[in-house]
Length: 362
Image 1 (cartoon, one colour):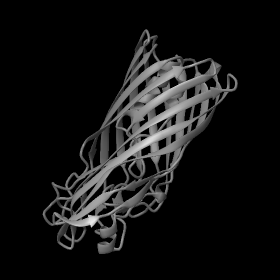
Image 2 (cartoon, helix red, strand yellow):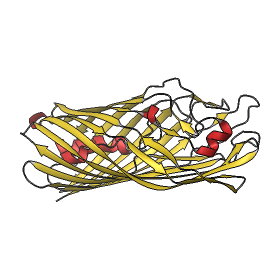
Image 3 (cartoon, helix red, strand yellow):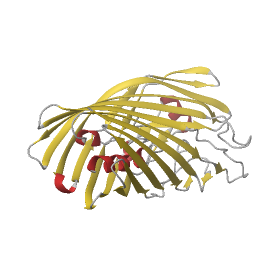
């Protein structure tokens, strides 16, 4: 019961990836370390946002500026001894896709396109002092690149191309468990990772020059919990804090032309999730999850025009022998936002997501 219901709970959270603060797409969970025995796990989430806004001066529409995107997670967990577990995880924790190609001709950002892609490889080790207490930690290698084109600056088309950069950070955590009632409380700290990019900036396609700049993917803290509350029933949830006020992209030429950052955030974000999982038979389990990230009232960037969100997710897992297949659906109500510089109003936007997870134990 414990593993099947836990998988159903997890697949509701993987659906649609994450729509959390900043450019976060996955919550960097260490949950794979707690899978029993040895396991291989593959997850894919696809998100279809509908995000459009209005320029208040003339009513011009931004069009749907958020393309569909997907996230992939792959992990291997090994029980080395009775006390030591290892895990190797690949995921895509940050990302952004923006396309204002369908905006009205009088919308100030018409033609702007931006893409930021990131991937992480994390190696973790867990050591159990006793049946109930364990500590874990490891290293994370993160890779990021970014491109932007077509941004209008005083009638000129601005572009930025940041080469892929690789940097490392670390993970530390501790967990308390009572296996008889499927209780687990895990606290995980993910360090910030500072990237030093080699980049070029262009204006109307002409090279302005080399523009090295530094960006910090912020630190975060995850508190994850689960507990059996009745036979075949599991209560679970999490609280995640991320230090997005430390994130800033300020290319040299762009800053010189405008006197501001290209992307920055005023506040940190905290995301809350709670859910209920239930086993219906030896093979089938299901779960429902509610997630909320409070709006902070800040003026938001035009590359991520949302302020908080609320979502509901449902998931089901089918288990046969040592194989589990899970499917999750998630609907996200994005918080309304007013954007920087142009003051566009984004209201009543949404995301529909689907997640698929395959777990093979051996």
